[in-house]
Length: 210
Ligand code: B1M
Image (cartoon, rainbow, N blue to C red; front, side, top):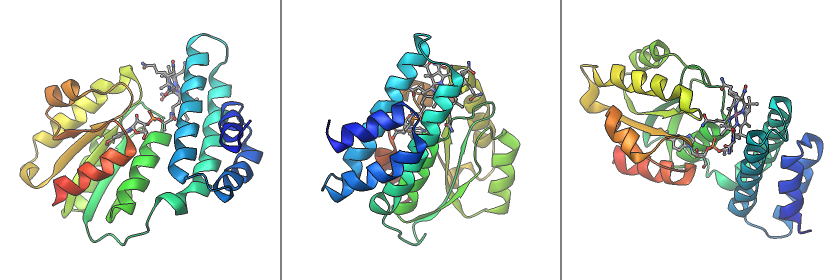
């Protein structure tokens, strides 16, 4: 088994204690951070598949998520450039009712490394909290929303609708994403952009803020 495969297996099995070390070893062997990250993302897809098939349950999903976070910590300095916020402010959060944050965190990290200052509101963020954050940060260029559950897509819709009703809507761009989100859904709810992954979200943010 290659080192990257070992990382993926450790994430899948939720082995938090060894993921960081294995990730570092994979990097030391010359594997790119993006390649290791993609292996971790694939491992989470395996976890999701097993959950769907009732082979594992919520606690196993949770430990796999924890393990992936440990790996991402090691990858972070290799993925993020550490640029200093001059591209503008981005408010990001996972919508109300949704606790999934790995994808949102990756998007935040990549957007930050594209030169933005990121205000991360966390998970299960109600519409009002996005609106308050915008009020306190009137120079915000982009609001980015993540949703991982089909059941929280309506919450995303509600938040985007509230944003669309703002007087200063013209000066803000709204980006959406997450596994169940599609371009068609983004168009339907009136978001400015949909992207499928963290790297393209960062690229799109740069285009929108230009
Ligand atoms: Co949850 N879960 N989960 N879960 N979970 C999924 C999403 C699921 C697909 C699993 C499955 O059944 N196959 C399923 C959703 C089904 C559906 O709605 N269609 C599901 C379910 C059902 C649930 C619960 C309801 C289970 C239950 O309690 N019965 C429950 C809900 C809790 C809640 O939120 N209220 C639940 C709970 C959990 C845990 C808490 C245990 C844990 C999350 C821990 C955490 O995040 N801290 C968890 C996990 C780990 C998963 C899976 C296995 C992995 C998610 C993940 O982190 N993937 C997931 C299965 C899967 O995704 N295949 C599953 C890796 C991550 C990098 O990918 O988040 O997709 P992702 O992010 C991607 C893109 O989507 C995109 O960029 C990232 C990659 O670059 N992206 C954006 C994300 N946000 C973006 C925003 C953008 C642009 C791109 O612009 C703003």
